[in-house]
Image (cartoon, rainbow, N blue to C red; front, top):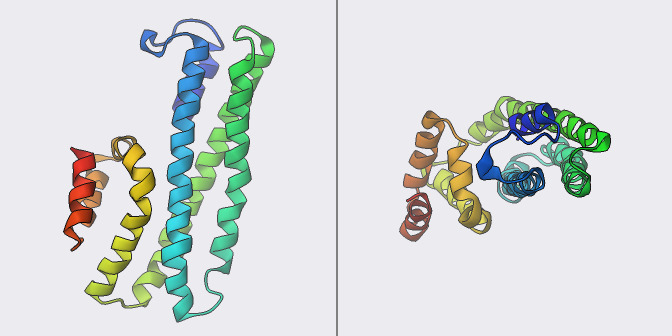
Length: 197
């Protein structure tokens, strides 16, 4: 999304993009749809943590996830603000100064969201994942947690799975497939694999 917004800024309303994207206005609508899908995946990620991971950690130590829950709320206004910015851009005259300025602001806000997201994921890897390991869950318990996460993803993943999987590096995609295959619930595995194929 950041690279795409940078490309929109570079072109600044001039018609020299990918013909498959259509007119500038059509491209902004496609951009809006893609951003909405990204937003769904990010909200789903937060919901998995809030509904599965954090309650599990809270059973080990009360108050442990208070800061993490607060951080989830931190980026939601930024994400919703970007969504509103894209709606505004969609109605501006593509050749106007306001359009070009709105594109620049959008690109800056997306870059900021990207940095916040990177920090968030690094914090989770540094702080939350070790706590999960400290719980010393049995293999069976780990599989149950994984299956709970996959069950929560059913709604969103049914529409967005192909976009999600395309965004992964090959090594990450293989790790994700390994996680799916480790589930014991055959219908869940079949459903997830069916979406891939």
